[in-house]
Image 1 (tube, rainbow, N blue to C red):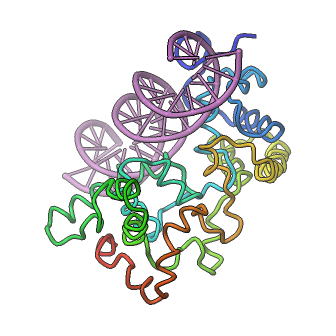
Image 2: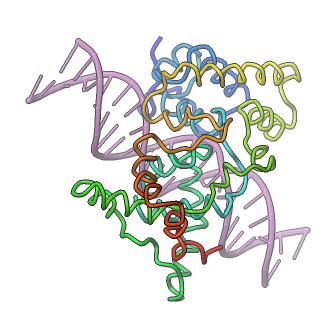
Image 3: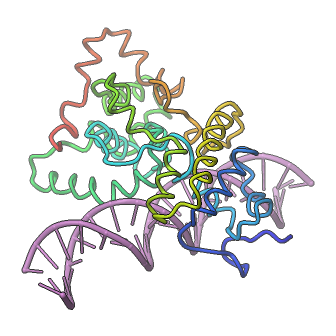
Length: 268
DNA sequence: AACCTGTCCAACCGCGACAGG
DNA sequence: CCCTGTCGCGGTTGGACAGGT
């Protein structure tokens, strides 16, 4: 069976995914885990290219995607990381594990970019960041301590909203089961059978735990596979060290003092 | 009510990175 | 090394929808 590729082969379906396709894809991933996308269309019979399957999973079906409005906290993080890293949405998304790079990219292009430009054009807005775009990376290459400080200055903010104790923030996080049951309702208004949705919900819940326990996700799926279930920090060990080690050593008051008081705060 | 314009967001496309042979 | 296949990322598009006139 020939595997469809994205551009050249005939019979490759494009456009919006149907609930049935979603079910097939989620069921397959529940069984095999994410990755090896090339095999997905071949093994499932989906007339979609591997890219499309991966995109659908990572941007829509994977567990733990947070949907809905971006919080001010998230907006600030995005603005600062964008100033720091540029349009490296996957990197930015790694700091907001419940958001996809596509979501962040869309949100930036439709909301934040204009907002930032407007504030900057007014001349009274915040500096995009205390360090220029890419400076942190250059610092990293030359002086790890400077880099650490630069990143701290750019990123340190008040307590992350994701770790807020109120349950409202937690309920905003959608499991994949919720994602899919919602899409089944929303897109068809006529889900393919209540049992189908229920089955799917159960399978995706299993997929959730399966994928989290497998640890076989590819590198870019590392962010994808991070689970939001607990109040875990999205920072990797290295990132945590870069961000907090020296600052913490200087005392918590410095940590607060280095918060982004000049960048982003005026926007919201 | 009809049309226009802007917004949102899912999905596609092209390219680069990377691993394996 | 070089080639090939695969994957992931960022830019962009296009359809659906909402709000304004």
